[in-house]
Amino acid sequence: MDRTHKSMRAGLLVGGYLPIQKQAGFIGGVLFRPDGHHAPTLETKAFKSIVLGGEENKSQEIFRQVFEQEIRNIVRTGRRTQNDSLKALLCAGIATIRKVEQFSPEVGGVIRYAILRRGLPCFEGISSG
Image 1 (cartoon, rainbow, N blue to C red):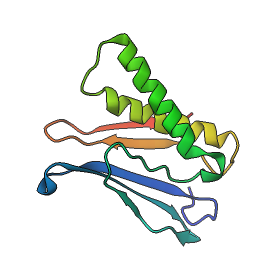
Image 2 (cartoon, rainbow, N blue to C red):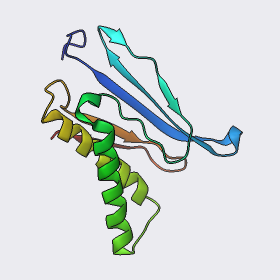
Image 3 (cartoon, rainbow, N blue to C red):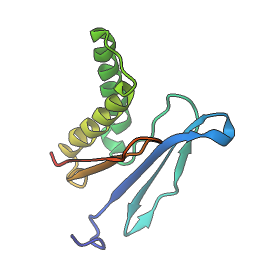
Image 4 (tube, rainbow, N blue to C red):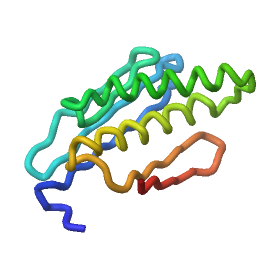
């Protein structure tokens, strides 16, 4: 992999809670490209999301629709667990990337993610398509 190739782009999203601010939630993101660097984004409003890249293919709308459908499916089963929201977010993220990659060749490829939670082991996953 040539990290300096002009088609190489990578997004990084991080979310969590800030205990020093009374459990204020946050999500931050940055999209990196060798030819430029967008300013990092930080969102602190409840139930907000950040989608990096694919804006011209309505990536934010795709993410919202898939996430809402996943949540409806969870509610419909009546068996809600603590990890359901996390699973719905992960599913929506992967589905968004896969949908946008159908229209935009510079989006897609291997998706790597890590889930870090206090008191639990780190979980790493890969979605290669």
